Length: 321
Ligand code: A3P
Image (spheres, rainbow, N blue to C red):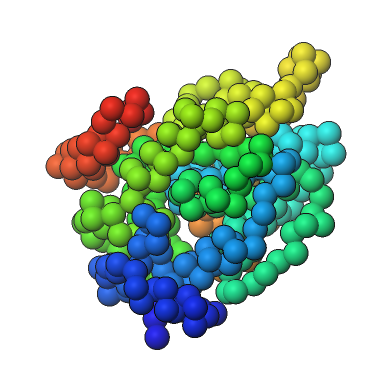
């Protein structure tokens, strides 16, 4: 039997036994499925997803690696898409009373987890989902659908530092452990961590965004921090719900940004307490935000190794960090 094997079927167990595996530094095994590393229960959830999920034309899928700005993107996309139903304000909006991860659920970590087969057909459209899977793993289920995929990426060094903090403060007892920064850097260099390697996943969405720009939008956390208004308008344009002149004049973009800001969200009672459906305390999704915190943690040598590894993989792709 595997560790983290809740709800793993015989079929999945057989598959897993044939996959390449690596132990992480705490001794837990991860398995490589279609180019990414996963714990067994995630492999099971992905198989369920691949078998049962069929995209609808109006679907919106928010994709990212953990710690790349997923929570922010979920909040923004929800607020943008539903702005006619829920006016963006700081008085009564679903984002004021619920965590973004409950409003936009993960395909593999929430909906298809533990061999579940959710009935998603009747959900109101547009359906908003999220995933940490790489493009090649969701591709087949989206084939022939003009649905929209939004990918957000962030510099690997900030992702790593954010991930390290996150794992050490995870309010989920079974996963809690003291991860050293050295171990985390080694893990990122090796690539065998959940949904990694970073550079492979980023490239999978980058390439597809070039080939099929109406299907995949490639966003960067750093650009969202630097020019939030422009990036939110870009998101709305891509999703086919551009802001009207009247909305721009009346400050709707700014209201959405204020509602979804880390300052606002992290201070809400709904995010200071409670846990998401995958068992993680809501507050663990909010820390500092911003760009460049890695400088306070990584040595020059660590930073150089990570940069070189990413540059090597992205060489010739047109994508730079
Ligand atoms: P830091 O740990 O660097 O602060 P994810 O949502 O993919 O798990 O990423 C978490 C990172 O995004 C954390 O980064 C977190 O603080 C930051 N974050 C969460 N909500 C945010 C928001 N509304 N705006 C900007 N950054 C946010």
